[in-house]
Image 1 (cartoon, rainbow over the protein chains, first blue to last red):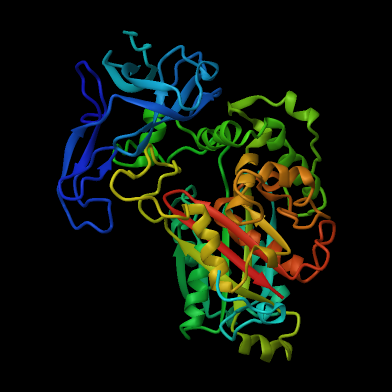
Image 2 (image 1 turned 90 degrees about the vertical axis):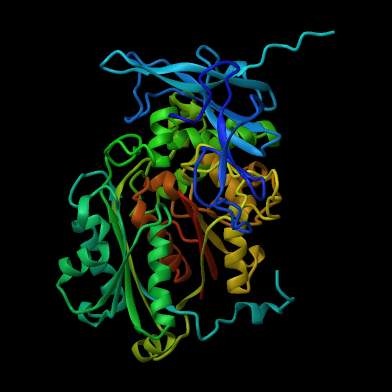
Length: 140
Length: 411
């Protein structure tokens, strides 16, 4: 989805921020501020925090129906809802390939990465954001 | 909660409390026939129970289905034509899982506004097999299309995210969730309208495949065909018809509401919550507020409820509702189901009908079916799954895209 994430490193999701009250919204959009006490019509695109904490997670064990483009044979994969502290948002995403529920826990640090969601009939890759476990901070 | 009232005052109806004169259902199943066919059976059964002629119905409130083409979108008209045009007023409501409740509210508002004295509320559906998917076409702006296409975030995936929170935050176990199915399946055995009339045990869960971890197939409600209808009227109309209001089922509350910004709980079909960075989340979350609004409207509280029908789209979700409804403190839903309090024969039976667990969801009919079930419970007619001495019944559901609804009935 064009405009939902940066396409060069460091990867981050792009939300919209009200230029008046400062609230955030994801996916990014134009039009009225979602805060009912704010009359602003100005929502500016803004990169969101790259890192967040897992709010909850699950694994899909059955291929979702179209319009999801499922691999054949289908391989289970994980989804995580991740809390971004500064923006006060919880955002759902696929979890990085190969990382499953057993590798996740609520409160765990994750960060945005990009992966190919599917390759279409013309051979064009379609990309999606994923939540990947954060590399441990280098200790001083 | 409002000012303290004595028990007898609390139970009193007001002259604005409409009467449920009749209820009717087509049994739930999976036949793939025209949804109108099911609706006709429910409509005729409700009219017969109310002893009202079709041509006397002044308002027809249809609950829409979006999976059955144009007739599904104009359900008020579809059922009116199928029964034979009478010149009645109509409405057609869509509010996802809350469609039936919105149709009920549409009829109730018309009657309370004085535009009609007696109305039919009706919903029916025919559903496809398997996961619900968005309606066809590439609609990149539609959040429902987006969550399927980008994430494969099915309805069970959302139920599972909430179930996982319960495990990690409250210490619930998957066995606690299974207890809900065990309870509801046992109740459903006695309900002639239920689709699944088989009792499940905890042992059955081990063999049930995981759909969206931690939820298994047995934790998740199926999609079904079915139909339900009720006839509602003014107390004056009921008085003329019955000669007394004694023992009539009254509609004490129908609270339909949206969330209040910021809605900080991830809800279908949204990929993200609202932001609470600059606006503090309201004290009552969305699902808490649905129940609160209905209690306020009825002047009743959780302690007054005899039985409840809650939307158990997943087993874990039923435990959420216990807490949202004030049946127990937050985090204690699992203890409540384990205590047996919410089972048929318990202190506060929940889903004595068997719930969605035994029915599977027929979207536009389901919230109306909840009202049928409560009506019969309050009249003592629920042979096979009767809650003894039920006086006040509550039904609650939530439709995606921010539709909440709670209905309270009493005798």
